[in-house]
Length: 172
Image 1 (cartoon, rainbow, N blue to C red):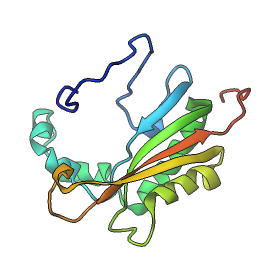
Image 2: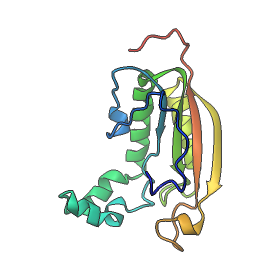
Image 3: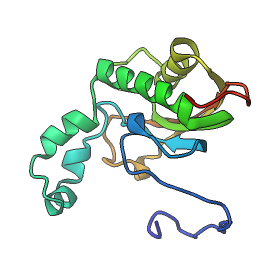
């Protein structure tokens, strides 16, 4: 964290925060949460395994290529994963609270599709129970990119969705 922040922000330590190190579609906290903040894998845009092969070797993972196939899914697997996440999150997220996703701009498999809009439609139209509140897109400067000067995600979008269930809804 220290490396990620140039200046550590002032935090309200009275607020309870929990981070879950697990796949988001399996998220099962004991109580409903006020917010879900996550960044789905950049579908076929980053080579997570290759770019972290030394770290993975120290963790006992020798096959970084196999890990990339799991972490950086193809289009249909990615869209299926997003549906599963939104279905699960409806019960995990308190009514009228927010789900915030940081999404890369696309994939070689979705050249003509706006990926953040597609994800929003999955939540609002297919799964239902969510409202698209806001999105904000910014270009990724070349100096911030994992592999500078190469193609791949050129922007990322912060997508804000709200669990639109009434505040009196019970958790299933």
